Length: 340
Image 1 (tube, helix red, strand yellow):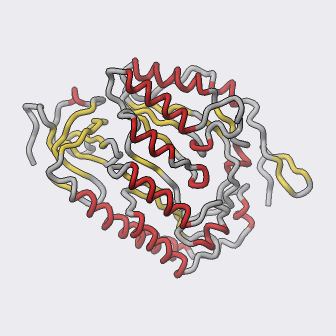
Image 2 (cartoon, helix red, strand yellow):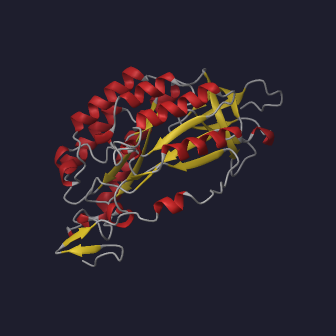
Image 3 (tube, one colour):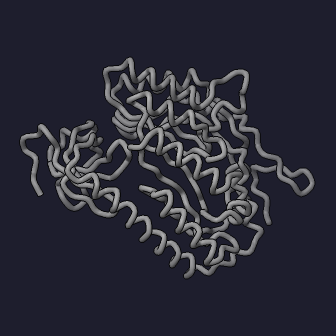
């Protein structure tokens, strides 16, 4: 196997790059492609060494951005009227672990952002992606529950519901650990939506192991899942292994798992009919003049109105219909709303 150009070798083992240039990159003044949604990097690199992933070898070890810079950027975005701010990192909840004596933890960073939101008269939502189950501190859920600006949505990648595959993936968590986190999440933030990442057709995955993932879906009731068919990544450990699950089986498992997701999502979405929710309006549909957006829990929502002036605003919507992966509703206090 060829070694990526960014790696050096010590014997047959790669030495991870050190991210020497990341601080100068963070000092570049950012340009935002949207006037109401922004992404704020807080951490770069990865120490987890999942066998399907090449990130540790291409981006180096985990490096945390100074919290003062993060808080300043978030504060400026809030003052400029941004409505959705997403904290970015390969493993955001390992923030600060590389600087135990110099930086705050991820929970403490969220708390400071929460205080900023509490003192602001602006309405905005703060998200983060993506965390790793092995570093998730339940205190994060408690902090989110205490501050209105911290969005009640958690993206927690599972990758597989089978114990042996999780070991083969070197995920550093098992299903029981994940179960404990979800139990604490439901108890602390019962209104929160739960998103995940899944790989189907990983090296050696049997039908029985795939079924364990199906059962995990049913147990954890994910609102959304980003399902990927495994493909080898140059530089990742699994690139040296046999990609032995046929492509037709990968596609079939992808479709089956998507159907399970749709059934679970529909059951949840139907319960939203008749309720009123806040929605960030993000644009218009491709084939109709109606507006689109998403709830605080990042559920895609079709808004039965055509007022372009609402784009970029958080509005109250009454949900009137629901389908497998989205909601639809009428905006309240908008006189020209179009009914379905």
